[in-house]
Image 1 (spheres, helix red, strand yellow):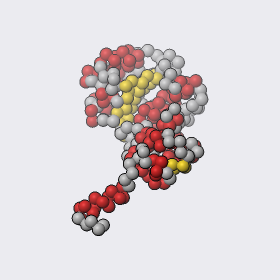
Image 2 (cartoon, one colour):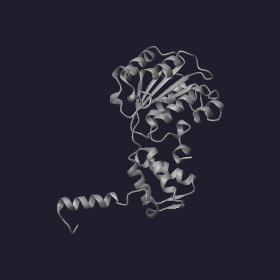
Image 3 (cartoon, one colour):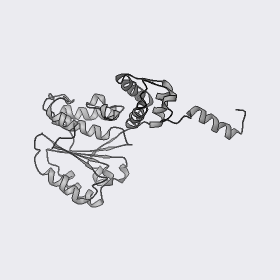
Image 4 (cartoon, helix red, strand yellow):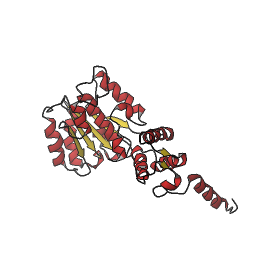
Length: 263
């Protein structure tokens, strides 16, 4: 299994670098005031779909106590959602299902019926900006008059392509790129769990290349670990990561600007 899937957050406490979002959503879950529709926006690999699944787990977990927000991650419901087998959690890739017919069949018609096993039927629409205009118009009615048992979660990397009529009916959360120190702590946690040592300069380069995206950083580490080395040095990582250091590149560019070859 890919390293990113192994360390994909299964509780809200595991979500990396999105404290402002986690705090609000967990308060809603604990108080029983979950919104009927959410819009998650932000760059790829920041945890939008993961957070959507955590909401689905939490509100459908039969072992979650009143006033709590974390799913137990052990019951049948949590395990089915974790394994993408839950019949009442419907994930739709809007990039491949853009048309109005898909929206009507997979969301609008399905939303009319009560959940089969769970308290809530949760629809997670990934790459929501790819839906056609007619598909958005069809979805609007469900957003305006949502059944009590339905939660809709739209995830997008391009929120400017979502119609204002849709945005205004959702609670919007903007996922931010993860800070350097937070990313470093996350990579160190994974390295420790995998019983490997990653040199500091290699970790720096992974973080810089991932540009604040957790999934990219973990995927890069996974590629480097494929070499089989237990001690990841710059040489071991050179096949995956560019060898040029940022500070050296900047110094070279500066010397060109100043036309100072001696520098």
